[in-house]
Length: 435
Image (cartoon, rainbow, N blue to C red):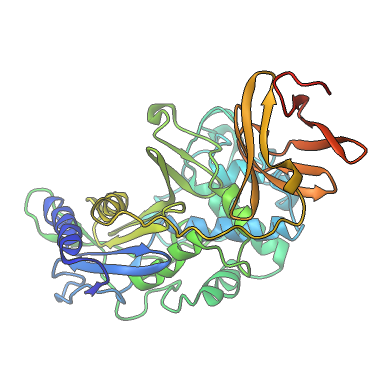
């Protein structure tokens, strides 16, 4: 057991893991929580990681199911950032002749295209995988679950296509790209396509007898980008840390923030949850958790982080049903309740390259606003709120809020600022000042 938290925190975390394992009859559960990008606590419960009674641990592999989709999404975003494809590209541009070819790459990433959830044919998770050609031969636009852009409708099939798109754009196999462009840079040495010892066995638990029933673990073939990979608590902790502090060799912070923005939602979930570009988003008022859950025959997994509070949790278990994936958000809540994140130490602000003469009070009509500096970035707050990025002399762009992407221009009479103009809003130094 790894522990870098207080004893009372560790006891509460372990009690939650034990409740999940015992209360929902999971043969074994492993869990870890992160703080400031590092594994702060790890624990496990259950004595049947394997049929022989091997114990779970932080280096024992479990199948991570749909957490695999987040890696496929990262590969897509890398291609976008390098100009190899656009998120609004039609799928058919990269996969000519395929059904649903009029949907966009963005639709597939966000499960917003109305594509059917599963490929046609035998239950793909419990049967040997098929080739890409066999997969698409069974596809038909008539199988759509609904129109595009109506709602979030989860589609494993869509991620099979995304994996093929990445492979064609790069001219390399999906697995090789996962290895070279994500796993190697992040030091995830125990994340693999097939299990490597020590690895857990997949089980279902008979609902009446309570006996363990072995579950199959097949090569998913063309559907591998949707749920094939195996990993460990230690490796998933490294991956979770990436979502808190993006490694630019893998993906930029801006692209991570783009992936973590809501794109589609299920009306039944209201405002409590939504889906971004390859990421599941959970509202934890006033915070936001991002990550993904996973399930494959005999296995369950969860990975969620709170980027603002720099905490996260990862969970793995070997059952077809039980409280494993939902443990991750609960462990985050326990960690932050027992040991609230410490506010960063304040230090004096650096000298601004430009914008010092913008600091102070401004008015939008009679509405007061201020421009200050926070973390070396100009911050407009009040009736209009945004951070401001310099684009050139006397020109700035809003980074967030209502003014995200809008331009703020400094209007001068000689050296004197007369007013600011942002998205047609005029800001003056005095209420309804002349400009």
